[in-house]
Image (cartoon, rainbow, N blue to C red; front, side):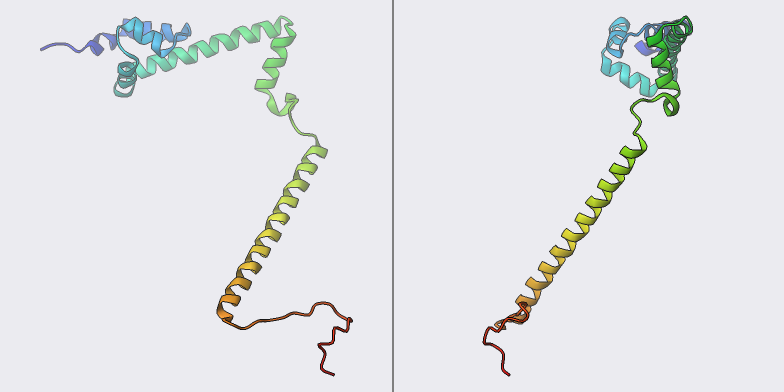
Length: 159
């Protein structure tokens, strides 16, 4: 019985190799090329074999930790850029300069309320127009005149 190509990649030394490639920043395409398979095959193997998926995940996390460690070391040595980057990403609530001021928050809140009120008014107008159109259709040939100008003698009064 023939062995599948995937089986050699399930061996511990090859899983370590996959982990190392991912830790070194290789893309899935590059890893697949190193393995002699297509990216689609690698994707299928990641779905099918938890060992391969875990090795690549651990390698990626390991790379992130290594970068984080180097960044932290630079920040501790006084690298201002590294310090700013570290603080903005690790203490967002305290050091995020893109946060809104209280005045900006109030302005946004007022704008939001204004939009809500405008939307309500437009909806009420649309509903009124719809009711009017419906009542006109129901009224048949009846015509309703509304005299909304008060106090002007237009000669229509029957006094």
